[in-house]
Structure formats: C-alpha cells, structure tokens
Image 1 (cartoon, chains in turn blue, orange):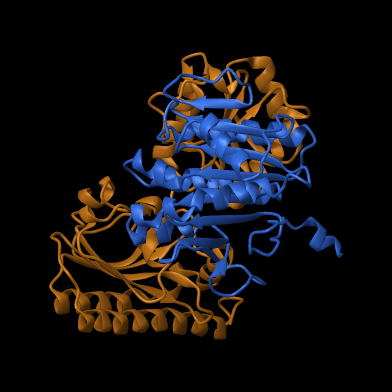
Image 2 (cartoon, one colour):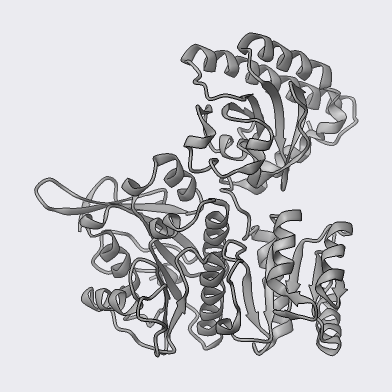
Length: 219
Length: 297
C-alpha cells in the first residue's frame, strides 16, 4: 500500500472510497434516511486507526448523540474524543470531554470550543482527527444572517484542511431552500447525498471527489 | 509584504514578549494596550489579522472583534487567551466567530504565528462562500490592472444601454477584489465600494450563467442584508464576467428598488451586454500588453 493510500481516511463498510487528508464532506439528506447515522459511521470508522474525533452536537444533547455514536459501533474514548453540545436542557455536562455552549446560535462559542478541543487533541499527540457537525440545519434555524454561518463553516473546514483532518457535516436539504444549501455546499470539497428509497432501502452517492463510485450505492 | 497584525493586550510584559516573538518571525505587529487604542488602530492601519487577550483594561477581546467585523469583516480574529473557553462570555457576540488559542499552549508564540499564517492564507473567517480556485481568480483579476485599462467610456455605454433597455433602478459593472466589490461603471444611484459579504455579486460569480433574485426579502442569503435595503436593492440580475481562462472577474448587473422578475429574453439580452463588457476588458488588457504597458499578454 502506498504512503498516500495509508494516509487517506477510510470509511470501512460505507460505499465511500478513502479520501485524502484535509477533505471536508457535506453529508446531505433528510433525517429519516439515516443521514446522521451515515455521518456518525464516517467518524466511527476511524476507531481502529485510533483517529481522534471532535463532534459538534447541535441537534440533541451530547449524551444522546454519543448513544447514537455507540449505536453505529463508535466508542467514546476520552483520550481521543470530545463533544460540544449546544443548549442542553439539563445544564452543563459534568463530563470534561463534553463542552456545553448556550445555544446552537452561539457560533462564536461553538467556534472557540471547537478550536480549543481540536488544538488539545493535536498537541496531545492525536494528529488524525475526524470532525462531525450534526447539523448545519440546526445552526441555520437559530441565526438570522448567513454571514456568521459561512464564517463558522470556513473556520471548521479551514482547520480540517490545515490539520489534515476529515469532516462530515450534516445538512437536511429539505429543511432549507436549495439556493442556501447550494451556497453552503460551496464551503466543502465534496458531498455525500443520503436517501431512503420507496422500498425502504438506504443509499448514498458521493459527488465532487475523484475516484468515488458513480451513482447511488447501497449502504 | 509582511502580514500586518494588530495585537491588543493590557499586560505590558506579555504583550511585549508576544509582539517581539511575532515581529521576530517577520510579522508587522501593531501593539495596543487597551480596547480604545486597538479600535483606533483599525481605522488607521490595514491589518491582516487581529489578535487580542480576552480581558482588556477597558473592555474585552470580543468587543474589539465586533469593531473589526464592522470595519474589516474578512479579517481573521484570534483570542489569544489567558482564560479557559468556559470563562469566555459570548453573550451578545454569538455571530462574531473567532479562533481561540490558549497562552498555556506549548510553544504558544510559534503556534500563534502559524495560526495567523493559516488564517490569513486560507481566508478562514470570511462571511460568504468562496469560489473554487479563488486564488487563481484573483491572480487573473490582477493581470487586468483594471484601473489602467481606460475602459470607462465603453463600460458606461453598455450600462447606459442596460438602464434604458430594462428601465431598472440601476445598472452596473462590478469587479470582485479580494475583500470588496468595486464598481467600474454605474448608471443610476452611485455605488461606493462594498464589503464582499454584503454584495450579491459574490454569490452571482458562483453561478455558471446568471443569478436572478426576484425579491431580496424572500431569499435567506439576502433578506437580512441591511446594505441592500440601504441601497434600495429589492431585485437583482447578475451575469458573471468571465475572462478567457474562465475565471469570473465580477458581474454585469441590474438592480431594482421593487421586486420584479426577469424573463428569459431579458436574461439573454443581459448576457449579451455582459459578454461585450468582458470582451472590452480583455481587449484592453491585450492592447496594453501589446504596447508593453503590462507584462501579461
């Protein structure tokens, strides 16, 4: 195996070919299609390699999303994983690896926690980090202007590129107009569309990246 | 040119040591001991990056970043903090977005310098989508030396034709520089240069052919853009001006002060005008090059 192939981020059983370090992926699909599960599987696929994980949990409490993460085979290993939850109804978590920000609309708060956690993992020797953001749709619900969202997404994706990480950021295209989703997609290197067919099958397709399977693939 | 950094910190010893380390690494550092001085510096110095302690004698770093976002919105901001993230109160600053680096970081000065380089190079805090290959686009734009092209009269004729034909509030040719849009020719109420995050053309150049917006108040990207309301822009049609290598330099645009649609034939007419404007610019670029007034052909 070449050095380049070794360094690429793998996604185990998902029909996504390994991607180069520094790749930011928009994972787009409705919740009922299992979109969040696909993004979480993309993060959990780094378990064997010991990749770090920073997970921004805007849709639900950190604990709930960590349960979902465990459900797809992930392990909350505190030596290499941290979570940012946004507006927990039960107050701040006692877990030092779960940081709480007041609201999904507090992009400054989420941003500085993200920078701090990412930096902490990196300086702690975890040099391969997978970032998850669940979800951009929730962030959009809490802001009026889009400028801060673009700024926040550039901050996250810029960090991932600089640090040779990988990111899977979820958006529900049905929850926003197509023009907004399209302009947000511009921040990413590629897009993973997720859908559930009429007969209940879950599928994905990768767009915008080289050397990926063409068309819809069975998950 | 060295990267210019504004560094605000009320602790003289810390500030001096950090400024010395950054200057030693080749950065042009402007020190400020408080929020007021730092805010003044933003009005007199073109800074590439703002670095601040969280606590300042007369305010805090997030207040400085708010001023920076208003004055120079693309400029990356870094909280070089003497506190933990949990001690930073973001109430009222939710949309600022800044990087965070603790002073307790091993090799903090070296990491700060690298972070500044990364943010400035990658333009990591801009509030708008960037086109693919933005650096190539800017390099192409740079080859035009727009100011020296003497294209004003030709462009004025085209924008006047547009205004007469469409009967809109305004017709203009805008060029998208790294941080703002400049208006080469404008018929209708005048336009001053506008920060890119406030412009519609920043979105129009992402489109292959045309972007039409019937009502800015009915589009999530623009409905809260106060600059558009101030400029009486409710409807928009913009066609990218492509150079010979395909890079979008700016756009040929129409705006109206009331919502309106643009028919297919109107869009086609606008595309003709845009094509002519792009060709006028490119012909003049080639002419200057042939005369030896520029390096590029």
